[in-house]
Length: 271
Image (tube, rainbow, N blue to C red):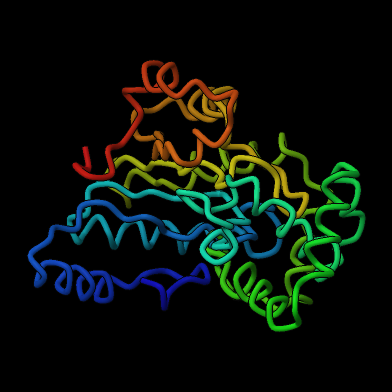
């Protein structure tokens, strides 16, 4: 549903059309990943109630289409950076150490985010400067397109100016406030009468650390405990992406699976 990615409701006819395309290929559509969560909902500002209602309408449409499980993410800041700048990593993305100076180079010297230097140690800034200065102009353009032309965790495509404007909106929000907004959204947004009590599963932050100075609230076992306790319902669960959680050395994945097993979805089976 890439053409409906700005927080608007998914009409039932569009959902059924996509379902028919999937079934025509011999597949079954049982899990949606993801119905986008508009930035106003994350910030609880402006028209967040309107966009929450639109999210509930999308939830209702997928329920009527027979889709069993809905996944969603609060994350802003996913990026495909590693696909071109991985430098030989076997599973290239931001988890690769060789990509980190390149992301910092963009943040510090192309985007020029205010106070960005406070988020990086001196050695990272030096490495980022060296990578930036060695990068041809075309490489800098490619880097910007890769990072912000369509952040998968966002509902819009961004220019440099638009991204800076968006980041300024998050400047004063804390991780605790963002988590509280998430819990309030899930508690009100799942709407049993519209979603038929179906499970919704939250995807972890990807990567599970801050990008652009943004707070992260779905990155650790402690985060998960807070989210599941905030809405203590079997319908409130996890999309357990091992690639995201496993990018942090302090996450014990086996222990997390054992602890949270009743609230984890298998993406393959849809259970």
